[in-house]
Length: 483
Ligand code: NAD
Image 1 (spheres, rainbow, N blue to C red):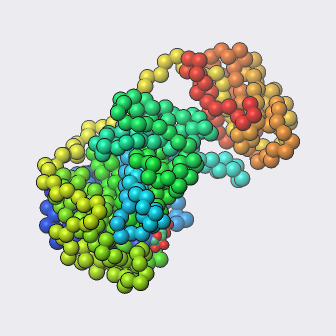
Image 2 (cartoon, rainbow, N blue to C red; image 1 turned 45 degrees about the vertical axis):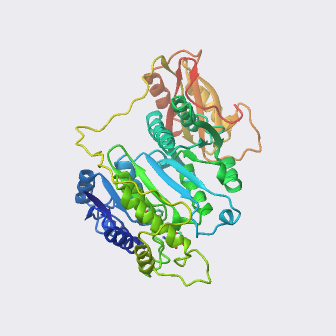
Image 3 (cartoon, helix red, strand yellow; image 1 turned 135 degrees about the horizontal axis):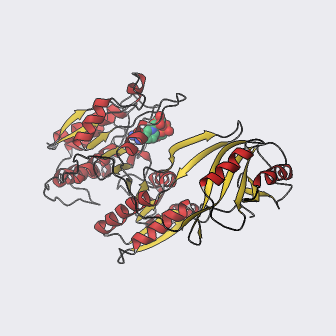
């Protein structure tokens, strides 16, 4: 069985070599094909951070085991880590945070066990990186949350939770504020929950979730979140179990999966052979299980847990009175402990299983549609205009352009209504949202909107616009604060 390996930048090659040495010593039946990805590939002129050969190899093999990779700063290029996850639709980012005996934390000292799996949506959200400067003062990020994308990751989380024998699955969100985007994610969560009546499914607002995670981490099992919130919450969970050195991650897709540590390239310690390889090793162990190599996974994990229990450590954790090992010595200690079992959390030796093949040739890009739209009508448009004038001046101008089809409904600035009512204490920036709706709620067509666009552009620069849709009697757009 062959997998693709990218060693990465910074501490990447050091920790990857350490992990592959452990695999080799355990006779893990895998072959590795090294692929070119990372900062040095950007530097060679490949704008997505990987060579076409690397892409071809990964798409043929289906599994990528990768070290952390640096995104060159200030060059306008996108992170190769995010590009890889998005290009191959590894929609679920699974991160497991468990108390490790020997890695002391405030919770382990208090006898509070932690076993939290964070499933983070991996493709959408602000990680689309679709951003524009609307004026010299105003930046806009588009946040995509889709129904099929949300269903994909949430179904994965429920299925995984069921297999794991979880008590509870929790959706973290901010649907009280982002009613349409996070509201859609939450709606999908409860839609999927109906198919799993034996699992206790609930939701917590993400800020409250953070507070609860640091006060009662043992109350949570599986937590599923959108991309950015999931990223932040999972680093918080890494802190609960001893830091980034202990946080593995699997990016799961239907065809291609990527296994990597949560941490980055640690430029401050790169090249010194002192990095902690545990997070990458735990990611590798998860990969072995994913591939059905249960016995190898259990032997290596038992040995890692035993090694940690003995107080063996790299410089980033553990009892400072004990000498810290370097990366190579730490991996050699794990190899030396093969066959030994930890006092706590011992893994059962299950036989290796046949590999389930997931890579197969696709004829075209999969199109995901989860719901056909019916009964849709355009009832208005939001025009985002550049102006440094006062709201009542803008309103007078806009009313002239409304014509016989549109009503000027309201004007808002940074999401707060400033006309027809508002407060003189609301600070303004030079970019307004002017909302027009059809005169009597009747249906408009795109030509009507274009007519308004042309007319309004005589007075203002229109930075962007959004149609206001009704689906039956459901409004498919948000109201301004104060509207
Ligand atoms: P980082 O995770 O690299 O480092 C944060 C801190 O944790 C540093 O003090 C570092 O020394 C320490 N640390 C991290 N991993 C460690 C390990 N295995 N052993 C011991 N200490 C460790 O985060 P950063 O400094 O914000 O990012 C550095 C670079 O990594 C950036 O270019 C960033 O884009 C990239 N990055 C890549 C990934 C990825 O490849 N998936 C993830 C995060 C960051």
